[in-house]
Length: 93
Length: 495
Image (cartoon, rainbow over all chains, first blue to last red; front, side, top):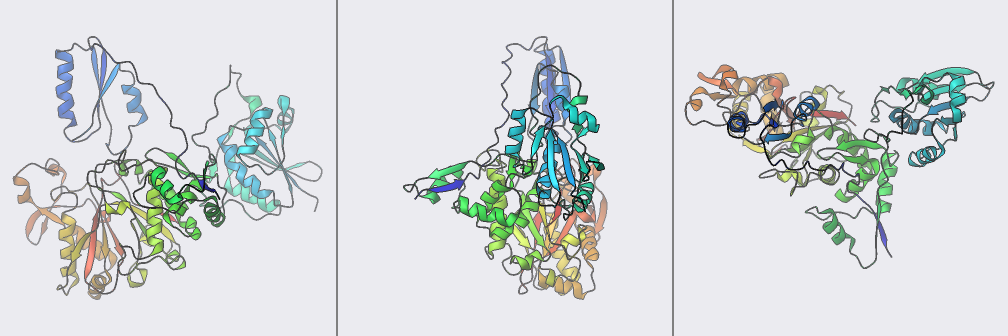
């Protein structure tokens, strides 16, 4: 005799999104740096910003910070970094 | 009395219309006739009736003639009509108080209880005939739908061992009871709610926790059907924004939800609050904790080999549930402190590390016992990290007896621990480390004559529960994850 199981797993399909094509050059681009507010993230991003400006000639750098690393980014932070050509996120301590 | 009629004007993709429909279904049992008008086309209306298990007749309103003649502005709008089709009550939007008044007017008992998961009120959408003309149609918004999809059925032939199948397919590390349709049906019957009601969306992946999905996981965990009345508020609690399961379930830290059960439900469902309370002592504690973990795993997607990134993990991720020993607690139990009545049953959750034991057999005074506990509290997170963390102190009954004998109230206990938990200033002169860079924010106090930084931000950072057996002078300290509005806050939900 066969038995019927009720599927206990999540069956709602996740939203799909396609990745942006890879940027081949940074020259003249607008780059966003997102600090998730873990200790040390600002040191890493300060250094990265100098490199991007001095060595790679980016047009502008947008700096944004999440109020806490423990929660998802707020919509206004996402909206601001969304105007950039690329985003670099500083993740860990 | 002439027979009354309840007429609801609905749209198939309006979240508020979807919210109100189960309540209208309940009113079908009233002496009045219940019917609805859909402002949408035949196919959308047919799908709506099927998806929502609509139990009353639904007609369409092509050209919106009826909507216009009634002067509908908002959907849903409920009209109560008398025997001569006169409107004797008109109620736009969703409002539990108004719904209950209408139920009574129709000769039914109230249908909307305060804690059924729906908000007290919710505004509706604009009536179709008043919508601005737009090109094309917008897709139905499903994210906040109060009704979810029906779970799929997995048919296993005789040749397949269902236990092995569950092991392989559901990928949990322990065996589970196969969630057969019959077992899930028993759970649903005990829940007394529609299988497709969405109780919450479970972080971090926001899977839809319908009553049916919760029931299937409860079966797997070995819960008795009556446990559904605890599990439903527990699922709401774990999805509460303040608890922040999104962070708790994904962090590299040790934290996992630790459940504290309070009130009469402890006796009604045989929750255990005495010896071995953190262990494998009672079916209710173990299966409730396990059901929550399975729900976080299977519906929330917090896989320990994936999104759950905990570096060392926590044995509580198998099951982590205690009941308060209210009989040995001379003070207010936890749920009463969190604002509920003592006679009310409740579940609380705290994002906790594993218990850190405090053994203190020789101290004869409240001060002596509490000093031992304060040294364990000082080590929460890392010794020099202050202000950002909290702790749950589980006081064993023998310690409680000693403390209470010295005349300490629960407030005295909390204040003593707050004032006596400090980190000596000399500790900050050496190596850099967690909490050192923030020392400018810390408050300087004296503990036993030594200058210290105060460990906790406020006395309420220390949560106190009485639990465990009456033999043995032990307590436990459970450290938090990142605490407060920027991390995880303890939440308590009534059962």
